[in-house]
Length: 299
Length: 223
Image (tube, rainbow over the protein chains, first blue to last red):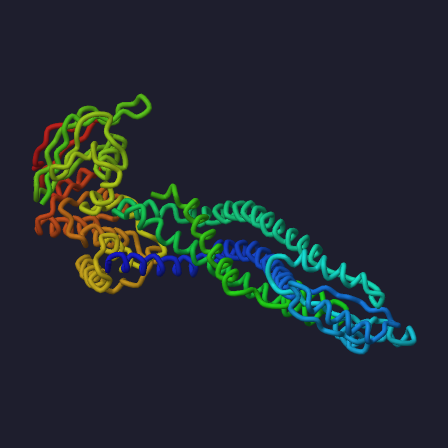
């Protein structure tokens, strides 16, 4: 065990020594890994944010029942009670015209002045029917829609589950497609990095020959290169995460009011811990694999 | 102490016979000069001893272990049991004299503190205790040769092989190097010095084996 630790310590110190003596190829390898992992991190960031938002929307499924402007309050109250009694309905929230206008201005601040320009509040009052979570939302929504449309006070009924399902399916395709494309790109980058690392091995070929002649085992010869590859990948992963977070914050700074909604949707939250660890682990694995390909003949 | 036994050793490379049925015994604790002109096969013999290549036929046995049948995985261990001084020194350019010598101990799994202590003593033994932190590029040819000798003996090898150890040195330094080999031999290490320098035979005053036309010829102690 102590011999293994001693070897590991030597690998790390020799790898650090190699960084000091020839930083160029090591920096190039790290930068290449960081660049591709940055692209992966930004894509993952957007995917995670959109997926999380769709998840929130799907957890908060609702049917919007828009009331006619001249709707009788008593009839609207009766409809409210009938909808609340339907199976699959969690609750019904009445939204009057003023609340609708307030929500509109919060959601679309850049259009806040439009209702005033139109000479009044054009938004209808509505009943927001919130469904119970779980399966069966589609059937409950159909029954709500049928009940609402039968009422003379209802102008329009909107239910977004089909849209959300399609969006979710698209995200699934993006996830799998992105994953497959990522594997191809990472493999290509791994080969490029292996080529760069091979230059390092080539520059040290005389040294490797000497190591072998004085009895160094293949593992002892390869160890420092493998550690260097591991550290390059790890550092590349960390750099990519920092860069992705910097881009996320910059997006909020420079997006302005008009792009705020889209920015919030795509990069509203930082990359969660698990995908962040996956980026760093992928970098480390990629660096290690590239180093292995570079030194596999050095034995 | 090590026995080195060579029997009917034959090496044919691309149709050319390099070694042609060499046989000799290098007995434990002996100091032997292997003399041969350039191109007679001395370096090939050294490569066989280090198991950088295998003979076409014949056996080469170190301490009862036939190198021709040695598995690749056993080669590093075999090499760690040898001390080798190369004609071109083969020092690691980016490591200091102390690190170059300690590297052999590092490879053998010796603890770090012990590595430094023994490497220091080995360099002190060749008179380089004042050049510990200097890299080979700054050292003179003679100093590099002495670092190479310190590296070869630091692990207390049973067999020390030196390939043209004085080839790059002026006569005074050559005398000094041979004195170091005598000291190593006096501690019980079997020493084989391969050279084309006839003067060295006189200086060594020990058994000499001649390598000519790919064959080892009768041995003797020159007057």
